[in-house]
Length: 506
Image (cartoon, rainbow, N blue to C red; front, side, top):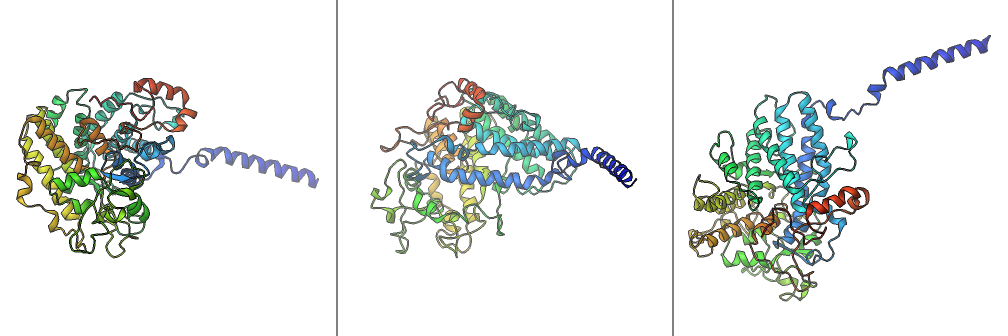
């Protein structure tokens, strides 16, 4: 009898457990972190912004600024050791943030939070632009769709990617300010949706200019410039897209806790950068570079650049005592514990100066009829000095904030004054823009590839050329073989460092 009762109780218990498991199945097996269950999509924003801004700085310092010949690094600049394993140093790793942004967009759409969706679209466009400008054809329309069982995304042409992100940016401009939610988690603009609109429209102008060798940008550029109420733009460095770091642990500038050997021993200001700045008596030289160790305590600081693409930098100009490390603004605390700053330097996604140089070029070439090319050009230069002067801590003695502002004669010298033929004027715009893009992700490299300015000559110990793209990661060959093979066809050439991108027509 006891056995019968026991079996009956066990049977009823099993049924209850089965019923409970069945009725609670959806709740138990739903990811509480899934986008449609987010209390606020803003919870994803800080991580996305911080991760991508930090990567932009890191990748700029150790790769992008090297190939753009702003920074010299003897280990990276011969290019013969660039392998598929380094693809993440060229923004490929940012595909993981596309997934996060798609979650954010899904959550925003579910609750009609258009401001969040608009911000996510701007960030998506900026990320995709950075990836495609490194590799060319990339997964775009199927990127980040693993949750939809798209584990092996197809590649799209760079032309398709550019067209898509231009549309995303136009949509973002329309969505931003169209809903009333308070935006949290926005560590870039602190919830100011107008700042995001300005960033979106600046990016549109950047992309339109970059593809201008393939597509006439005139109509779309002029539509933006002709209606700044609808399409607002940066008005100063106060509203440019630059991440402000904090002094608390984990939120400092990435260089602050960096490795001093990377900063001093491996990386120096490039000879090209130092020469350009010296030739113009440019006061950014002590911002971008440190005095040579041999001159640091003499009262007469000197600055020595190093060429990229040489095997032994100690054989250059008397060795490291005559070489300049990157400027103190970006120094790790190991180098100067009393001076290095956690938050003086920013990670710049797009600057006001860059925008002004885009407009100067557009006006000089006749793409737009609004404004004056020389005014845009001078705005871009002056704002560079104003910006860097504002970033110099009071504790710095070289340079001080005042020393970063040039005398009026800076603007009248032959290498700066907006005079000469159109070709000469454009070259001056290009040089100043290249300087303004110092340590700004991959933008200086892309600018050089499109314009050929400044002149960068392969060093004798390099592979004999300057790379114009990066090669796809090994996992794409191994795991996404069919789509990888298709990508080579879309690229129009072999998967090599010398194959030009779609917009690189010169």
